[in-house]
Amino acid sequence: MKEHHYKLTTVWHGNKGNGTKDIRSYSRSHTVSIAGKPDLHLTTDNAAVGDKSKQNPEDLLVSAISSCHMLSYLYVCALEGIVVTDYVDHATGTMIENDKGGGNFKEVTLNPVVTVAEKHMVAIAELLHHKAHDLCYIANSVNFEVTCKPITKVEGV
Image (cartoon, rainbow, N blue to C red; front, side, top):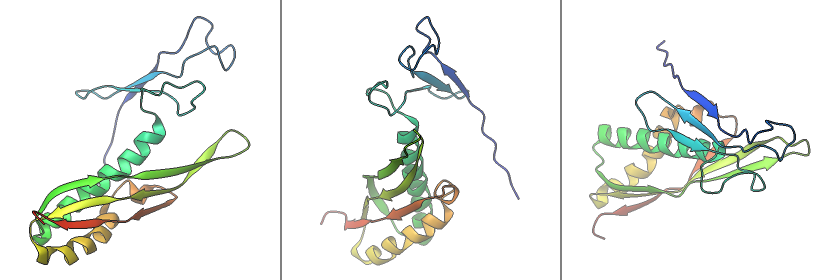
């Protein structure tokens, strides 16, 4: 079994002088750094204390699932001779908050619009989403439903 290891640093930048004295006294802004890659400037999803101009962990979770599926899908298409010329996913996620302040994701839905080079590729292209899902490391690591509702188009049509 081959293991993959990831290393990053998360730094909180939110001390406004009083630390976490109370829930309104600090910013939720933080930076995630990975050597040799652009920094991610993040915040909380909570609109009352977050910064809407920054991404949040929930955005990144849905992004990770969408990105992983796309990369797996393009890979299996290339192996099967399906020529994809365009791919756009309008992914959505639903998270449920509980009364204690926590919560969990209920589902993520991928809505990829895939363009293939030729009409005879459409049926196989649609089936390959299942194979891509089986290969996707991220989708296979979450404990909620990930569904895929693809639309397949033919280039130039």
